[in-house]
Length: 445
Figure 1 (cartoon, rainbow, N blue to C red):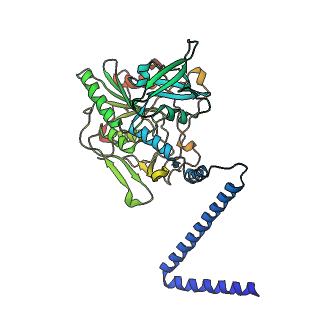
Figure 2 (figure 1 turned 90 degrees about the horizontal axis):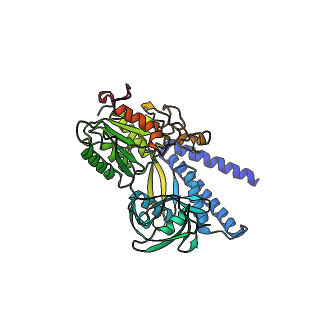
Figure 3 (figure 1 turned 180 degrees about the horizontal axis):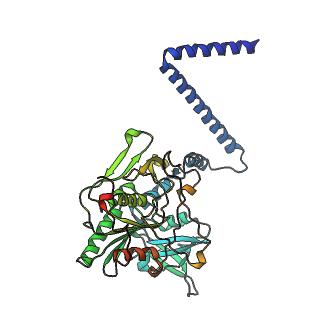
């Protein structure tokens, strides 16, 4: 009997709600919002119950802060591969990377087994001056073994306040005994832009990432190369964006602007259409319309694709190489005070012609595939945004998703077929309808 009464009451209540909703649609929306809110609270209670069980009953006593951080990170990473939680230490590291300046030694390192291997000392840094060499294996930091440390932990130990010392112990090929090297930390500036003259007639500019110093580095590169190459003998410029994973959106806009006189560079659109943004070029081309070739490959992502897409759409440059990575989303860093920050995907970006490159990348105007050396054949796999689990799918009506291309770039310039092709175009040794591009065929300014 009680059950029947309960059902009758529920039915009567539902009928009343329906009658009110028909008379006042706003009331129905409020009821639905309340129901949704109630469901959210139930789920949060579920999380609390699970957290308490883990904290009280797990076989070993867990770190509560790590549990919560992992839960937050899991929530964000379930959205897409580029959203994540950054604990305070990771947030500081991210700020260091984007600032392009920190107190440290000035070495690029990687892991080799349990040891830290020096990839390269950065020119004119404390490590370079102290005699650290590429290939050195770091075994101890201030007498403590590096075995057991993660790469991030080792890097954190090597960074520190300016004018403080650290002694690193290295093993070096051809030297039987370990070598102790004492280095005084100093301000290290990450040089994301490098440049050189090639063959006395071409300016070569390489951008490895987009940090706060990139656009100023490009301007310095153009200025110095133009002074050295000035005259009728200059054939043009090569802008190498291969294996550049991206970085700051504003820096990508500024680098694109350096070679454009006017017109859209990129636009971003998120869930709220009213918050869409468009970035336009200002008057002035740093190289005064001289021929420009952009090199890309499967390692060119995000900010690199913004630059390549803008210059390609405006027919300001010819893009040479292979299909880019295809990361067409914008991440916003949201600080959380003493708790670090979150990196949240908030928008997609679009090239001047309205293309979204999400999960398909930028196609070069001229595809030039870099051959793999025999020892790498069959061992490298082409991976792009479309290969990442949980990636944002291409929007309806856009071109189908495609994986990226290989990322191999040979160290020896004589083996670099993509660069040689670009130089051949600039010097007139190769001919193509895609070079030089016709600016009148680009998108309207």
